[in-house]
View 1 (cartoon, rainbow, N blue to C red):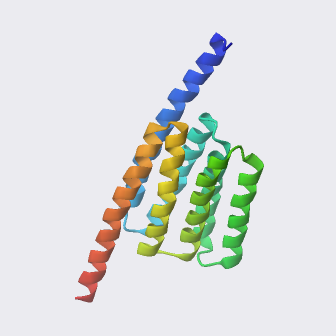
View 2: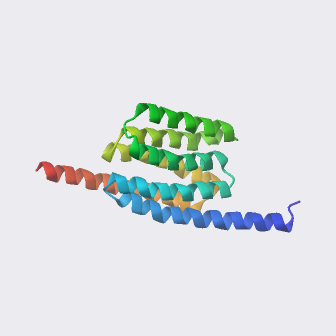
View 3: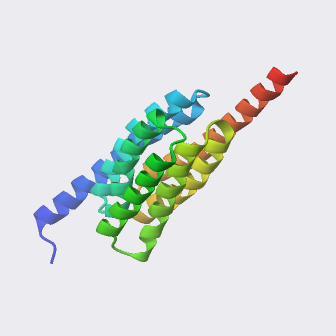
Length: 179
């Protein structure tokens, strides 16, 4: 039987997880609305702090560990863009933290998101980077729905929408520059 203190802890974790997910929502919108890759990546650091915290609050260890690792990945990708050895190290680290914290088959979803995002951050920029990040965002939507995070699921859905608009804006800017 669940005691009163266990219910209170669950209530705190649930409310804190939801609040943190909504904070991530605001940060993600700001990030993907930016046409500057450096600003996008910096804001994604802060968003992933919020995502990691909310996943740990909801007990999703793999998603939380990968979200925490994404913070390092973003910082490294800014400094070592295009570096195959650094990217390979981050891919291996993503696999390792997933293996260490693996609990169920559905943990493949945040693992896939982490791998797609790593490739996008290290090897791509502009529109191609945002397209691969959209694939990762779809995986994160599923992960957030599975843990019951309303704010973070909305964040990822709005990331997809905002990302699509930004891709359109970048395409338009490219066409105007060529005209």
